[in-house]
Length: 104
Image (cartoon, rainbow, N blue to C red; front, top):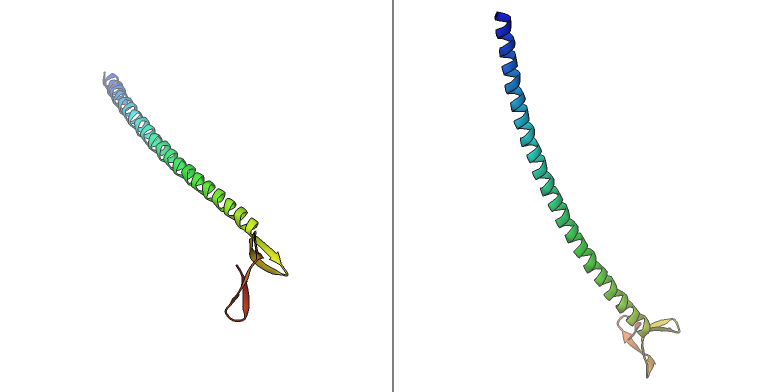
């Protein structure tokens, strides 16, 4: 009888431990799902920010490219001097300080 009582006590204890394990597993699963959702949300938000930044940089590159195109059509080199090309009068130069010339 003593042996049977011991085995019943062990079975009850194992049953309680199994229930605790199931509860802890469910809590852990919930925690993991919550953390995963927060992680995915944060990553998605950051990807959105990076995407918007890339768009802004792309537009800036386009503006700079257009500016370079405008400048390259307006700048010329004559006799080793760089100057702004004026369709009517060609390259114009203007004397600047310390003995140099600046093409305008």
